[in-house]
Amino acid sequence: MRSVSSPRVPDRASRVALRSVRLTFFLTGLLFATWAARTPSIKHQLGLDDGDLAVAFAGLNLGALLGLRLGGWLTPRFGSATTLRIAVPVFALSLSAVLLAGNLAGLAAALVVFAVANSVVDVAMNSHGVAVERRAGRSLLSGIHAWHSLGVISGSLLGAAAEQAHLSITAHFACTSVLVALFGVATTRGLLPSSVDGARSSGTTQHPGGRWPARLVALGALAFCVALAEGAANDWSAVYLHDEAHASSAVAAVGFGAFAGSMFLGRLCGDHLINRVGPQRAFLAGVVTAGAGMGAALLVGGTVAGLVGFALFGLGLSYTFPLTFAASGRVVGVHPTHAIANISTLGYLGFFTGPTVIGLVADSAGLTVGLAVPALVVLLAAFGVRAVRPPSTTTEGVAPTSATDPVRPA
Image: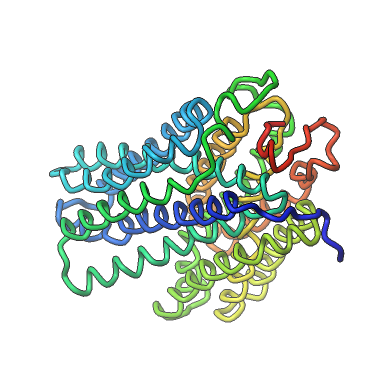
């Protein structure tokens, strides 16, 4: 099928900015995975039980939501490049704040700071990714998100190596913080100027971040659905394979790997599919693949079906969340960064909600029925596919963009 757009030849600044934003996604993924990989050791070191750890995670979730609102306020005022230049090293160094926690209260407070900084970076780097994508005139955000997945994988492997080598948490976190801060500052030098998405980048009157046009509401609902499904698979894939499909612990762990690996591969290939068939068809193909694949695996049952089902689930979901970010940056009357912050908030809520909903359903009806919920939710998202339509087909009057006026907000 013929491409739906005519990609522009990227200039040197665009190519450098693309590499820079990819590396920023990679570094943030690595940094967060560094914390996640050493969580059991931190739990043991502080003498926490599961309930205590749940309280600490609540601090992490609270900080994430607060940071999204803060990022939505800072980024459009100062531009994503300036925000990242400050927020990336702050995020990196905030990891070391966890080392100062001597008890549960200290850990929860440190994680609030860590999560706030993470979310500010999330908003700014997604905003910059949208700016780079619009300057290029073709889909790039899925591949950019793949670098975050690669960072998570790298951070997890380095964390496992640190555990195996009995490297202290202090040395591990301190070295990672300093290196990511230094590389982060160097990386941001290649970003596009802050004028591309700062407060002065628009010549139109825009609604404040609290305003939710109908299309943004629809995109938020889609983000919530796909994030809910991703969160459910992250937390319950290995449990399902072990408890319901009667797989060994090793095979159950492979199930999560199949999901995460297919997410990464899907994001690498997602831009090609989007550029080839358009955002709507690509989104529809993704949610149908995820929902139908997972649903069929649950109906068939067994280890092999479960592994295939989670692989298809990850493959289908992989590029759908980045697609909602790209589409939100084109919503009329709302600054792209405000839109991205709003979409991110609903996505985080979905990510947090999914595992809890599955657990409640599984407790009364079994995990097979519980996992049918995200499969159904993803299929229902197909009915909102029009929200991701490209500017050329929208009736909302999105202003055209060009290489010299790359990110004029819709």
